[in-house]
Length: 209
Image (cartoon, rainbow, N blue to C red; front, side, top):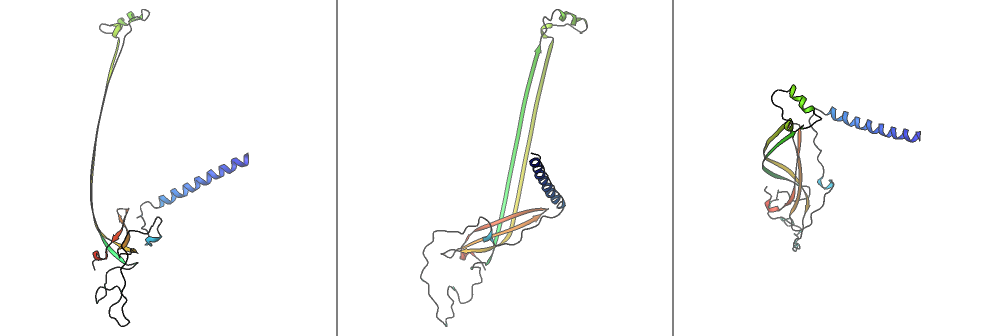
């Protein structure tokens, strides 16, 4: 029995030591700017799933000759510099205009009234008239009133404008040629880190050089 209690005490002490180490580590980070995450492959993140959409079947491919100046899939004589392959980087423009306004008002009122009479208390009610000023009415000897009123108002107004460019990586090419892109960027402002995540499907025609 003593050995069991000793093990429990040792386990509890170990938990307190671990909690204390965590507290000390957080205290050492006070006043320091928060760290940003390193660049990672978005396909390796937990919860990543490839996109699957209904698309028409691909058309017949035309192969170029051995000495042809045109490469397969090219749309012009010169090389297309726009991002279109897996791993290519796109620049996504993000514009956010956020407005929020919250107003709250609370009102509460309460009134209480108590009355107590001592009409007959073994004759002692007559003795009260000797040392109390004025006329004493035993039926309404004690009378009390109380009132309470509370009122509170609150208002919160917030506005935020964000206009920035985020680098997104092509993670998948659909059979119809559309590109699946994902990007993430962290912004550190006043010791606060904000993470902006973009993802979606882009048509190659919408990608500007």
